[in-house]
Image (cartoon, rainbow, N blue to C red):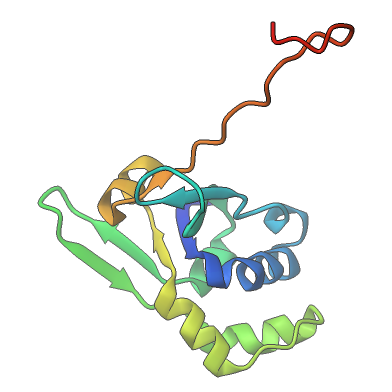
Length: 140
């Protein structure tokens, strides 16, 4: 198992969710639900998931590593394998779609807040629902 922080643009959220759930099963379900934006306010421009992933999944994905001086090196992963693996999971994608996905996501071995800071993103703050008294309808 390897730690990865994966940040995807909103436009790639649905495809990323589908691929992760299809290729990683239950471990990949429910990803990319935490929204990010430059201001921390809605609407979200990106979505993030961070945690342990299998070695096999990590090998498929590109991964950026950031050294103490802030230098970034990126391993390319294996996008050429994703189309056939997706097909085995019943997901139809083209190599062009996968290449575009890989070009648009940020995957790193950084902790989530470090990766978000590097990209100038903050978690979208969702205000809590207003509590009301059930009988009077007044705010508590």
